[in-house]
Image (tube, rainbow, N blue to C red):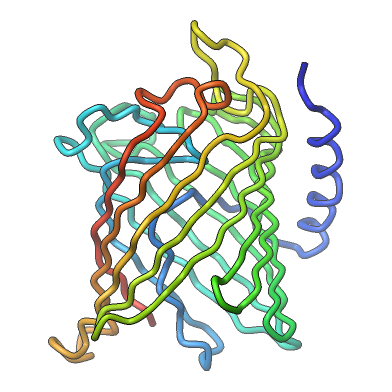
Length: 281
């Protein structure tokens, strides 16, 4: 039996909050490497990322079910603009693409998915709360999401994401909610910045991800844990800033998933890798 109480409890206030902020349609997917922080002194700033990934992981689900992902990597360009607003508010607009030869989404060529999003966040001292409305275009359909993100700027940088799917689109799963709690420890190793993120996800809704013959109706409960190591190296020291403020990024993330909640993954435990460039402006 589906946990409709958890879904209804979160859907209504989140939708009202997103509509009240006037956020445009948008989409965001779970990526292994966080974008480089844009310059805070600019009214308008942004980040462009050009990443190659071995897997496309969406809330613990290995979308392409890659048994040998090294032969067909995913190209995932990312662009986000940040607008500094009065009274410690910030607005964001962004897009993320999945480009590979693993399927045919109908979007044209090797473009498998295009996500767009818009968000609004407020910061008080070290605490930030924000909401993001997203639209994920793939499989000739649109998955719609409202996320609420909480973070506190301190040691281990704790975060909580309330990921709320309000339209299942082409996901094959159900509408509902996933709670993702995270921490991250960062330090410098010479010019290289290192971070070690840890995330735990709890699924409030039955059948959030699609099932299979062995498990046609996935359960609620603990869905996955992930731990990673990410490294970033500023390139301006070596190439200057004539062509912009570029950074080389790379990382590994290890996932442990529960087959009762996410049954379609080829293996319950797997390692993903990412390598790319980012430009802050």
